[in-house]
Length: 482
Image 1 (spheres, rainbow, N blue to C red):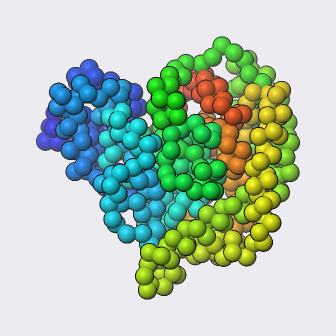
Image 2: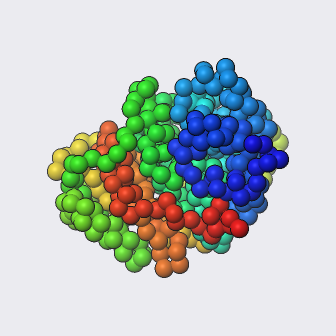
Image 3: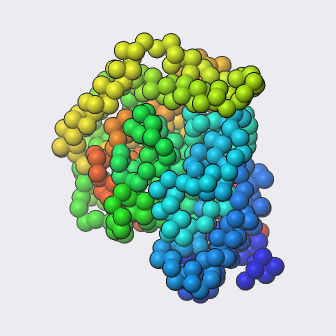
């Protein structure tokens, strides 16, 4: 099969398969890697003009990589079970032969020569990158609306945000452009867009994957990486493939063990969620109870206000570091023409913080492992909302919204996710519900350090009990198939 014989209908049909099933077509000899990649390119060309999920296209390099995999010697040398499957790195991920712009006007289009071990692992497994996904500038916002562009739209409703910061990744997977797209999560940036777009989003625990990026005192503590997908088995494979322990076996099925699941409805600052989010979490809790798990309602043993204040201080320091780096790159240009108002506002906030605020933030991080270990001594998993309200309209969290207003509304919306980043613990968003308009609402399950397998086993069970594989947005390979 070639581009000349591969029809849009063929490409859309392939796009409805998860990564495992796409890879199976290759292993069976039904298709070649070039066919899988060409099908992804056709889907991107058909759907992305409206979605704007890609910030960079790398079709020719993807075709070359696929052709190399299809040569007998290369196929023999590639042991990865996902060889030939197309994917998207995020615009902040260094990938050989592509620029790393982080969707900022301050960055150039210089091509990166090599990636870090995380990318090297995925390349060694035979995944084929066909471009990069869009994100907010430097990943600092919860909506993917960079002033440089592209503004990514939610495939369930083009008027709504896909979330952020991995919004382009989640939108691309939700629409079926690719079965895998990389996400990075420093405060919810995998889980938020997974909830908004109705896909599976795992935020691994600290030190569970090989190194993804250069060393940084804040990012090394907060940020975790994984691949968005539409199936639990794809997410489980990606976690195992990039685990710090090479050759780690993936979780493949539910566990017979019944869990102690705590439900926490309110956010870390005590605010109640939107009624439709509350109802969605209640439905998920009922499902868990019907499956035989012991479900109870508890509260986090934390000072949520102090904890989130500390997180906001660290987030501001990330922006200040980004602005310092941008200043060195832009030459004589005005900083305001190269860096967005939100980033500049956060950087100014960081520079006005007293040093003891940073000390307090690191103290919060230092005491969290002990606090949560004691908390999880009587519990296995916690169920909470991912976000306090359903997906917002585009523009709600745009980077040029007045800083003080955006500071308040955005952090109120992400009131649930930063805890796992500060604590270094795992969490996963599952697409188990939707609101009255049909927009997805994710359910977040969180656990203690090293309990990713517990979360994945539970996710398999919930996926079987409340399947989502056949739920597709209007702007997708299923919604626009004819």
